[in-house]
Structure formats: structure tokens, C-alpha cells
Length: 363
Image 1 (cartoon, rainbow, N blue to C red):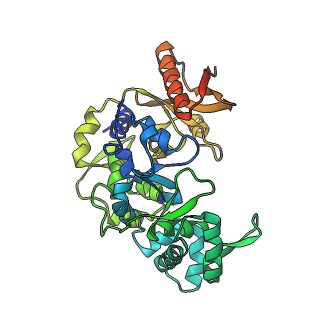
Image 2 (cartoon, helix red, strand yellow; image 1 turned 135 degrees about the horizontal axis):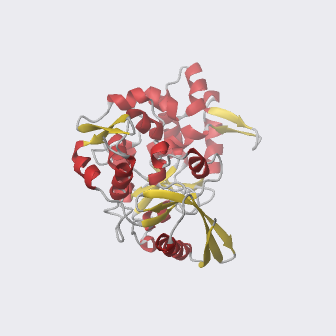
Image 3 (cartoon, helix red, strand yellow; image 1 turned 90 degrees about the vertical axis):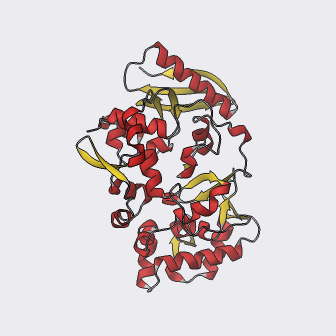
């Protein structure tokens, strides 16, 4: 039997949210990928784990469309193993990951993996120099037949389906140029996909290591993969624990860490921080009203983490070159946590290169 506080403390420690200083080389979340969505995306996720992001550039990191088609940051040195790790497990898995794009392909007798390879081959041929996403998509629309294409009403144009486009990019050896909007695609220098990811980059093992204990369904939901495919690749070296009445798995090597972890420290987590990506949301936030605030349909806030517990949400209120951090606590915060939150808000202001005008604690 393991209580939820042990689970949260374990994840704080595993994800290094309790440390003051770190490097890209020793930052564990880069093994699974750091989602880069919004202004407080991948760089802020690294900053709250002690990495000096002012020194981080495209020489050390690479941005790829990977898990769930979202842009994720990785170490550039790991790109070959990452490419192997993020491949769909089977054709059925590929079909699930590309959503409604699989239906016309199936009707035309085209396998999902074959379709991704065809798109990747075309993309590789198009992107010989850096190219804006829209230009690449437009070129592809003239080269591929109808089962690959859809009519986009907002654009009043025919495009490739979005998810096959994104998931084919890594197969084509293409990265996203940092800090470009709209996205610019370019070839990854010296790209070669590894034959296998190895244990460190295997996504099932990485999820268990960083977001465990977990069930196959929770891992499958994170990957957008079929549960059947995840179960078929479930590690042998796991132990079973019961969390909130549910039997879950943990890598055996982490059993002692689960028992002993003490998640201390205060952090302002970005809306898409890995800590918030766990698929057992009721473990993270048991209160349904609070969960609705943290994970709305649109416009996610960040989360306030204090000593292993999520205690509220936060949003930036920017005006010119100054901004206020608006905190919505879920419980009464005493002076010490408030002071620690203010320190983190100052860290965020420095990260954004703006002046902090204050922290607004809603009553």
C-alpha cells in the first residue's frame, strides 16, 4: 500500500524538482522529452529544475514533434535514440496516433506506417534548406493523393492531415528551429535513427521512472497508443504497488526511492510541465473542482507546487515590461509558503526578462 503523498514525493525527486542546480546532461526529464508549449514551456521547465537556460542553444538541444504530436525538447546528442523511442509500436498504434487521418488511408488500402514513411520521404526531399511549415504542407498537398489530404475550412485550402505531418517529420530527420513562429523545419545534421532506443529512452520505462507508479492504460493514454501494444512491451523488472486502491507498476530499481522520497521545495510549474502530464489526475489533484481549474478545456494555468503537493494555480498578468503573478490558492497559505512563491515569481520574471510588479494572492 502506497499513499498519494509518497507517489507525489517520488515524482518530485525523480523529476528533480527539489534541486537547485542541474545541467542538460543530468536532467532526467529530457530523456522522455520536455513539452514546449506556450511562453512558459520547455525552457522554464528546465529552469525550475536548476538548469541555466541562458546558455542553452540549438547546439545542445533539439526540438521535435513527438509524443501526441506536441513539440518536445531533447538533448541533441540523443536524437537518434529518441527517434527510435517515439516510433509507433505497430501499424494499429500508428493509426491511433494519427486519429481521423487513418480512416481514408484504410479505405484506400494504405497501411498507416507505410503512409508515414511516404510522407517522410516527400518531406525529406522538400526540406533541403530551412522551410516554413505552411510551405512544406503546401508542397506536400501537390505531391500526395487524396487519402492523405483534407479540406481545411478556415484556410479554404486542401492540406495534409496534421498528425501524420507532425509524426512524419522525425522519420524524415527533420527538427523544428527554435523560437520560430510559424514553425520552421530543417534537416537534423548527421541524423541517423538508432536501431533501438535502449532502456533510458524507452518511453514506457521513462514514464514509470518519472511518473510512476502507473498502469499500462495510464502510459498508453500518455502516448496516445493502444493499451494492447503497451502491455505487450511492459517491462519484466517491475514490482506491483497499490495506490488509492489501484494496482500499479513501478520499476524494481525505484522501489526504495518510492518509500524514502521527500519532495521538498516550492515551484511554479508551467501549464505543460511533465509533473502535470501524469494520467492519474485524481492522484495529483483529488478535489474535482480544483482539477477543473487546473485542466480546463482551454487556457491552462500553471500550478503551484509546495513540498510535493499542488496547492493552487497561477497565471502571468503582463503589462509592458512588467507583470504580476496571480495565484489562486486552494488552501490557506502561511507566510513561509507565500514568501517562497514570491521568490519563484521573481525567478520567473528574470527568466522572462521583465520586472515583477508583485504577486497577487486571491482570497
